[in-house]
Image (cartoon, rainbow, N blue to C red; front, side, top):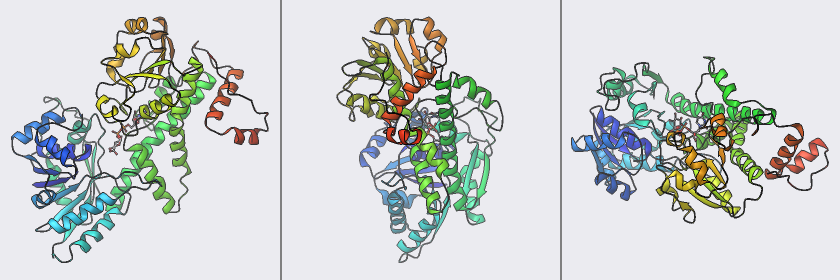
Length: 494
Ligand code: UGA
């Protein structure tokens, strides 16, 4: 089938390249002409494992094309996938102006009827609005458009594999013929007949690629419900981590046992610096707004979001507790991307952490295997190192912020000897506490008993809580509810 892709971000590029890989003729476009020129020259604007080889092969074979002429792209396809961004507005709502622009473009440029598929993450009822917009914008042309929703569940870092071996393909349609068209688009994946380019014939067989057909509203809701549930799971793990830290248990032991229950499952229970990226933080906000508009009590979602927002402050409180004064200290950061195997820094915990440490006048030296180039324009004044060992040089603390596998296998003895003080604050529980301590590190993970392997004592817990409350600006509220005498200064320890 001939397919047009509007938007060449993470979703559009992966979708376009993979649809070409399974045999379709695909033309992609974007309103960012620099991006299109980069793609036409054979360079990818993003890092995503396996995407470069798929783009290169399909471009060479003539199945995948990039054009800056958006009208040409629209006219090319029988089906048009909308893969444009839906960033958050000030109030948390999704900004749907790019979807509206696509509707106008499709209506004005089409020379025949087309299937229009929303792939972008959008609030429920957007499909209905898209249908109306297409009808209004095309009233003089006489062409009609069918709309479907086809939410994506790709994870950055494994997006190509997720696309070719999905655990489900969800389509929201309002008639059988649209369902048939979408089945045809995904047939090689549904029937497992594709020659997968990444597993060399050893594709995961456990993925049954269920094809789920729903109404358009339900399909849109499925996407937001999934991302918000993942966010809830992570915040729940982080809440348990805080309890573990204050009362003396180990969150990894707790969530491991929880995950063995098939009703709970092991995934998305990793405690740490919280969820970042361009999806979970904005989607939970948009879902909160949707729930409020629907007149539903969304405090469950709001609490998950606020647990997440406090992660960096509580990490900073621990750093401060370990280092006492931060000003003028040299601190190394390992990891800038919002998670491993991507160069994406949008809403990455590292960005907020760097901003806050800079306010404290800390000397920062950082390293990430993929995300340095994207970070440099945001923080030109920090030191970008060529490898993790340079980050360790003369540092008084090393912070692990992204869970890159290569950080796990560093020569940690060498790291220790390079540091001024062998202090590691592991925001992702990437390393093993016992091993690090045996190597002579002061090591602090997330949701672990304190440095001696003992529960934090009552007095220390109270001090810690005061420090945290001071930082969150909640002292007055705390005093009012507890009728306790205020502690004059935040308490810090060494
Ligand atoms: C997320 C969803 O997982 C995808 O299913 C969805 O398709 C995608 O959003 C989207 O809407 O496009 P992604 O943004 O790539 O995918 O990232 P995740 O793997 O979900 O991770 C999000 C954040 O949560 C990361 O910062 C990660 O470090 C953090 N995380 C994840 C945890 O802190 N703990 C965990 O146990 C898992």
